[in-house]
Image (cartoon, rainbow, N blue to C red; front, side, top):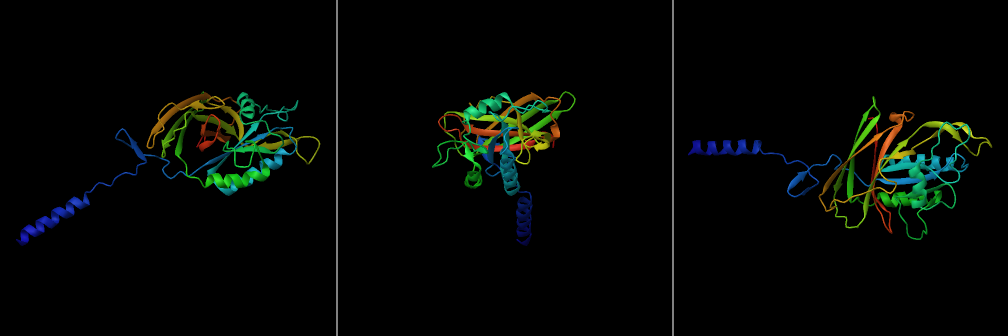
Amino acid sequence: MKKHILLLAAAIFFLSACEEIEPTVTGSMGGEVIESPVEDQLRQVIIEEFTGVRCVQCPAGSAFIQDLLAQHGERLIAVSIHAGSFSFPYSDSQFDFRTEEGNQLISYLNEPFGYPSASVNRKLFPGQFDLQLGQGDWAGYIASELAIAPKLRINIEPDFNAANRELTAKVTLFVDEAITDPDVRLSLMITESNIADLQLTPASSTPQVDYKHKHALRGMLTNYDGQPITESLSAGAKIEKTFSFTMPAEWKEDECEIVAIVSLNGASKEVLQAHQVHVVE
């Protein structure tokens, strides 16, 4: 009898020691277990600043955005869009920061009435009559958007070939809460920072020659208003898309970032989630 009890105890110990530890999952679709590399991703907010090298007040707005980035870290993403009447380069500017997509975005998100001006998550907030917000409104609306749980999470896997300057970006969406809006879009931007070039500032009537332009929109891998997501956005869905782009030689890849935005496209253009990674890790 004693021998049987010992054998039974040994068997129980062996089975418990070999128990499989279940992987952390974010959901399933069609019975398939989906693991997410961004399982802890929180809400990430995008501020799209409209600016120009001839805009004397814009450096103050850009400096304020740098303070907000220091405060919120990776949860805040900034894109500076050079478009509008202040964006024309000087005759001795090294770069023309204007882009076709930027010119389209300033119409899509409404022309600013004054500068500095920016859109926060492309959202029309209560009491506001426009997507464009003055500098005094940015911090509060960013904080309120950060407090909202995301309906989905975004993973970006960049692959840059320095030999031919070909950039490939694999974007994976992990849907946590069903999204039923009829028109949801994925936008992919490329920004570049620390570009030294001319910028008018309040310090002088002549532009500063070595002003450092940050997170300037350089181009997009999708249309300006994004690529429609035609797949089902039911809870637990995993959606993968791959984009390719040849980066111009003058862009410094180690200063460039890929920005992904999932947003609505209709009466509301609200951004549901944004994410950003370096082109070169």
